[in-house]
Length: 306
Ligand code: GLN
Image (cartoon, rainbow, N blue to C red; front, side, top):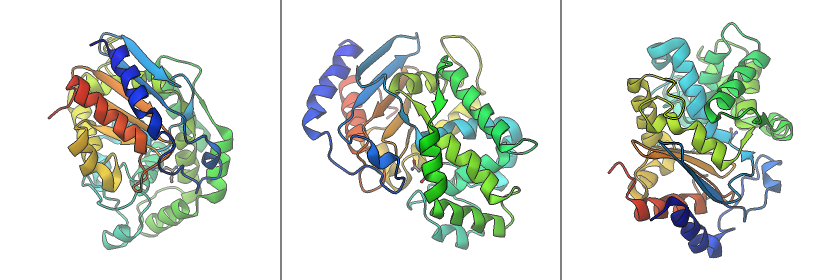
């Protein structure tokens, strides 16, 4: 069946469920988003794009950005990253602080908030926050092959004003010597990367290299090495949905990364990348209808790694 038909079927099947769940309201600017929005896009390795619903409307990518900053930080410090961040699933919420104390300020993995703040700290080395943020944004534009991608300043400001838990995580890690820069500088980078706004089509396109062993199949350019792409995908599979990662692997079986803006990016090796957006979240902070959409997609296409 054509991918377009598959996506349209999914949109129709899930229409009655739109709005189920709860939008992230701890970031006031995200609380304003209509919970019934829905978009989904697939980009195949040969560059074919299929999209349904509001797949061209930009949304706040939030934690989906962590995959891309991880790729950048590994490019910067390579395996040196692993002395500062672990590689195990956390089994706890994305903004949990309790594990950090037991594990002496070393976050379990780079896809929870604490880990991503360390990654942001790595990207700050030798740069001003503005430069580090610019570098991340340029990377997203390069990967998505789209210069129109911007940071939503209102979302960044909203989270800067209310991100007390993240501030606590950053201060805590700084106390253990696991942040090199002032917590506010690392958080500045982190809040702005989370506030990047992208559509499903742009996000799927940006993630395509993860489905082709680190190479952008459309341009033929190598983004990361094959081994690095495999490792990033492994982290997405085991940690990309926080304490809901096991369930996502069980139901979908693709390396994926969610964000509290309601987006999910998933890579299907050898096939393509998919992105979905539905702002209302489940209890673990992952898009409720978005997860269902991914599950339906895999059921209809067989695009799972299992
Ligand atoms: N910016 C959000 C936060 O730090 C990202 C969390 C997420 O998307 N899971 O809380």
